[in-house]
Length: 260
Image (cartoon, rainbow, N blue to C red; front, side, top):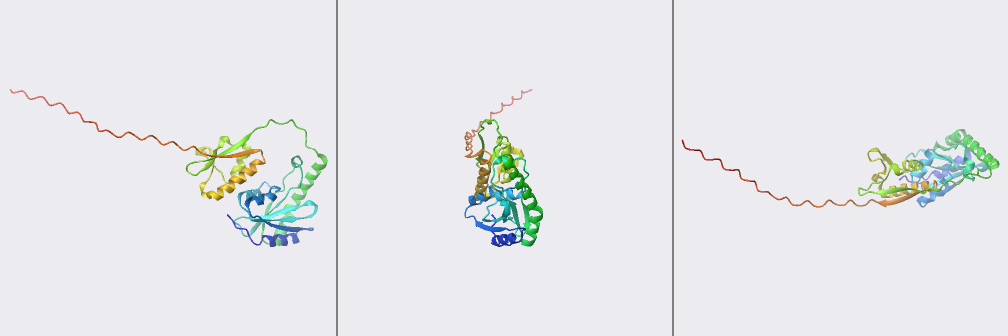
């Protein structure tokens, strides 16, 4: 589990001072793992930044606040001490306002504020501004969601089973298609010979607990529940009866030779 870096707050402040326009920064620590989801639930990214924030326990975050409701999420890039990740946060709007809007996604930046600000201004902010404009236009054009016939309610769940050897998994055929990516992103591996998604025991109890919680939170947003259960213990085979020695039948005596 990567440790929180002490330079994030200073980096975010220096970065805000170098971005075009007026930007400020706020810094927040996360005493517990669920605390980090308060901000990343608004993350406007479907790439590697979303993967990082759901795959790792992050001890802190910074948010940059710009003009016209622009907000940028900044945090460590795990295992890469020379880099940070920056991603936009979505505006406050209803789900139908994002339909057809291309997500701006986040980028990786170096821990040099000058170079990082130049990369954000060149690659991230133009996409972010276009996406914000599209959503705000949708707010004006479609204030109410389009009328649709209510779809039949389907109770979907993913059942994860603890097996006797310590593995945790679920059959591939039992996983809804929209849930498979979430399992893969959070460390589950598809094992063809077993036709199942398995979470390796090598993550340890704490690591697997973090990944299970992240999967449950992500699938909940799609209306999919997660159940945990233990596999039924395998019944031992009945003992074999003791071997019994059988007597070997005596061979018949050879006939006596007749005298001549």
